[in-house]
Image 1 (tube, rainbow, N blue to C red):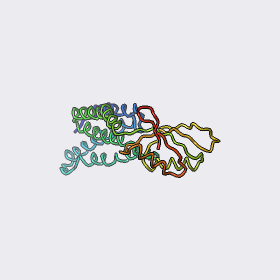
Image 2 (image 1 turned 120 degrees about the horizontal axis):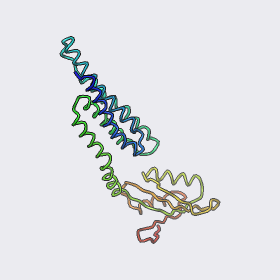
Image 3 (image 1 turned 90 degrees about the horizontal axis):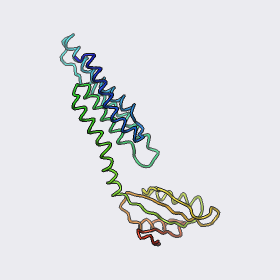
Image 4 (image 1 turned 135 degrees about the horizontal axis):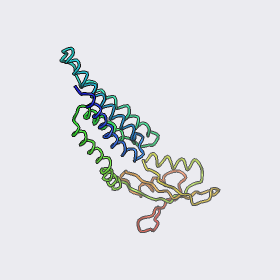
Length: 236
């Protein structure tokens, strides 16, 4: 039986450990931050404590030996999925999946709460430390890998100055999974030709010449230039 004092201590530890992970997510301006992680860890810990105490009560008061203290705790892992799904669905307006790391951190915090509730405090502290390391230090490794794979280009595009042509260009980049980082118009709005400087990035293994050829194949695109590292323009 977990005493009231021991239960309160475990709940407080759960608040602290959940707050450590939640603080990092809050600092990154994620959808699930400090309070969410604290509540998840606290609630998970409470479920584990109640689950153990109910099983012990059934045994000592009624002699029931087949009471399973893991049932309530097991439902926490399943039920926490709706919070994780919410952090992912909130970013579906963009054409890439975001929120997976925050969803995973919520799931991990729930597990930490269960471990605290079960009384394995040292294990819970170690797990929290490792989760925090993954969220803070490994992000630098992730950025290095991302920068290594990411290709960035800047194109000078001359095309017909119409709304339909602009939409056609935007649809091309979207279809080819090319992210437009910035663009600048260097021609007057009333001119029949639009001249744009477009900076793009992509994780696809595609050479700039291939993109230029595909752009020139679009209706209304007249010229495409790009700047190599030596600063000299080349065109196709």
